[in-house]
Amino acid sequence: MEYRELEMATPKSEVGASAPSARSRPDPRNGAKVRSAAQGRLEQIIFAAVILVAMAALPSLHIGYRFLSIAITTGYTAIALYGLGLQFGQAGIMSVGHAAMIGVGAYVAAMLYVHFGVGFWAALPASVVTAAITGGLVGLPSLRVAGQHYIIITFCFCALLVVCLTNGGSLTGAATGLDVGSVGRVFGINFDKLANYYYLVLIALVLTLAIYYAIVNSSYGRTLRAIRENEQLAQAIGINIDLQKISVFMVSGAFAGVAGILQAYYLRHISPTLYGAFPSLYLALMVMLGGGRLMFGPLIGAIIVSFLPEVMNLNPVDSRIAYGVALLIVILLLPGGVSAGLLNIYRWLAARVGAIRQNGRGVVTALDNEGRGRR
Amino acid sequence: MAALEITGLRKAFGGVVALDEVDLSIPGDMITGVIGPNGSGKTTLFNVITGVFPPTAGRIEWLGEDITRMRSHQVARKGLIRTFQQAMSFPGLSVLENIRIAMERGAQRGGDSGRRWPSAEALLDFVGLEGRAEEEAGSMPFGNLRRLGVAVALAANPILLLLDEPAAGLSDNEANTLSELIIKLPKMGIGVCLIDHHMTFMTALCSRLVVLDFGTKIADGAPASVLKDPKVTEVYLGGDL
Image (cartoon, rainbow over all chains, first blue to last red; front, side, top):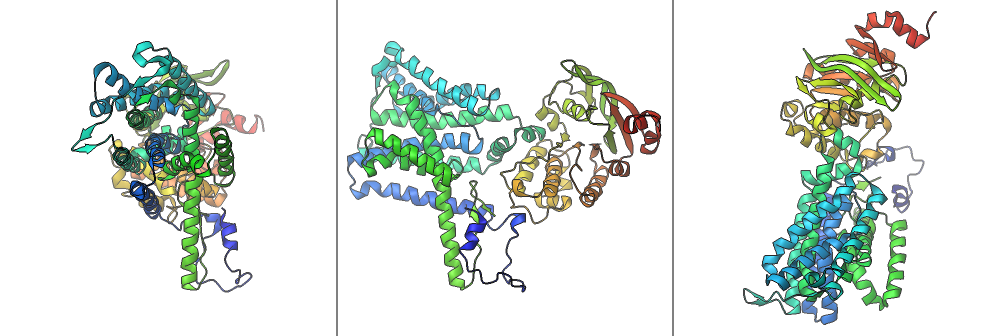
């Protein structure tokens, strides 16, 4: 939404009036600077916290196993999405092969269990490290090719991984896949119970969000945004863009590794088709739908895509059509994703309420897809 | 002593020789201007110095260290910072964030950046962008974008600042403000090397002018004497008058 449209919503009483207005209005040519970065961050944290509290309350609502299962899927998918959020939202490098990273994490955990009897907690670091290294390796071509060309490479890697897993013999369980054990009991908590496993995923998700927030607001996060905005200038002020790109692929891979092992121990059986082209495209869809740049964007994307078919009672074919339509609507109307749209609506409402309370008129700024006020 | 010492620098793009046996030393305590007609190799000179692409032959020494084959970010970390002909910024980020990104890089080199400008706000004041910290860089008018480009380069803590046509596209008024800013830099311990076409702008600023034509250096010295040089007048005015 543009500044102009929002201004239209306020009474046009002073059109042509020569007396200067008591409230100074930002000059549209100079760009608005109404909302500080800190305020924007606080709003985002509140939004994310509201969603997380709602998710934490889910099991106590007696929603049934099916609904809870979808919630678990949403949880671990969102963890992977935050990695993709850093890579795409912050560093500006899209990938349509991200399910392959989850696959690496899941298969490392499964293979360790099947062949060496290693359990969940010991396999967790192995999954994370392997997925991170794989992420870095798959990121290497991005130093040579950019944009759509790199996206195609990630797609190819995803296809390659499925081929390898399918032909991996007893090592990977071939097309049938591998059976995984259970997390079992830790500190007297039985993680075989669905609600408890859900809380495990939720805790991992909260930690992921905390790490994501810390990265985005750190010097490292700013470096990634610098690369996204202008590689040439980034180099000219001393940023080693090759190194930083590989690093973000590794961080992104590590997040996917956590998602992978959580998925493997939730499903208890994994197979190559889980990590092919379609799951990868869904991940990209979720990030774009939710919005990659705001803190709660990936989470909203995961929730929408996971729950849409359930809530609207769609079959798999219809749901794909629904996703396509949803993506079109978001790209055309909400370039920053649903998250930016929601924050926009919230700010507009808050400003309206404030204006009415003061019995004056408040000029509302719109929000860009970075989460800052803009003209 | 010269801070930047260039010897026998040559850069060929296929058959086109953009720089041909250029010898040049640029001191770190004054403003040196590089002028020359379009296509004379000025920007190529900057690109080769800052490691955007390697030279075909020759040697570049910076504070006694060979930087000929170094990459852009390595050169920048040595305190050799350049700006671009097109006003460049991180367009989607706020002005403050633009500066902070560069300051964090500049601080890594150590030195005295912190003493010059203790905060991003102080630097914004210095370049005349006060009160614009929260604006989106890409939505600023062109003149401010130019200032921001210089501010980002200064934030990166340069020893020698290479400015590629900083006054291009500015009004006379804006160019004057910019030259007032540039002229302060050597006193703050920042050497400046400047490319521009704007003759009055250059003669007012530079204590030394280097003239390039078809990739070779044809004159080097004080502005008054360089502009009287018959070779220079020929290049600019087309021979006999």
